[in-house]
Length: 387
Image 1 (cartoon, one colour):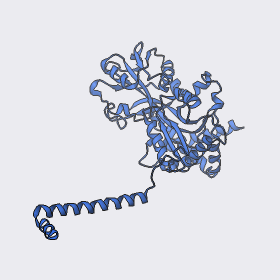
Image 2 (tube, helix red, strand yellow):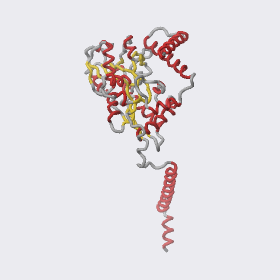
Image 3 (cartoon, helix red, strand yellow):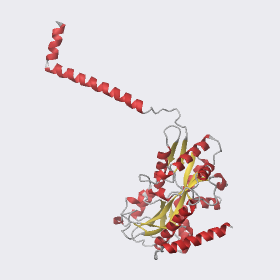
Image 4 (tube, one colour):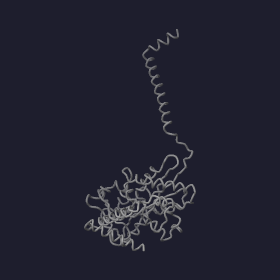
């Protein structure tokens, strides 16, 4: 009787559909369990054990190009088990020096070279020349000077308010030195760059200075419709002697620069510096491991998919007056180019240097023969200095 009743219930349409739905749910459930099993077998579970193993903390210059540089480094060095780079957004070069010397856990930091040099020359941090070492010189960062309508030249900024980022940022040191060399007296303010742009929009300040690798994200969304424009930096012999001349173009900032009308400016170098770590300590060994992986995989960073600023980096470039982190120096010695290679690399770099200076300063381009003559003069000068 019970069997007959059950059979009749299954023959009812609603009971039949309910039974099919239960069967589909059961099949889906089994499928999900099988899929979870496959995923679990393919990828090990993330656990808390060993999460601190091989961690190196890198402080960037702030919310600018250096953040992507840090992310690029993290990608090529993180092996998921024994080595990991953790980028931390900093507040600028001056603060980064403080953090590299005193903030718990910071192993590496990106610094502006001019800020590092000033800290040493003015003894802002006693013993900084021996307590910090460098891993490698990095890319150049361009000086941006964004002005409001009515400010057409740097000279127009005399006695005006110019924002130079928050205290501790490298922009302040670069801007003060640059305006001093230009002979233009201005009043500096220290708002964060987002606030400064709004003040510029309202007319509360005349300009915003910012040192960042181009294209700087904060300027890419701006356009000249609001009266914003980038000011050219006059390239006098004094300025060229102190900074690397360069240009900003419409490719960098299509909303602020017209095609074919580049803006002359200057650039400052950056460097990857290491904290004063005890040789043989776990943190020292972690940084040494990072350096080996970074240098070994460096070429991949110059390929598409990474920030184009990597193409400016020469791992073998020295930072005069500073000591290189020993494991970095040892790697470079082990992997030194063949004897015929350095001269060719130097020649290529010298040619690029001549072209950049010519483009920034104007004038007729040099012929290949003229470049070759200048290069040979440079080599003779270099040889004479070595004896």
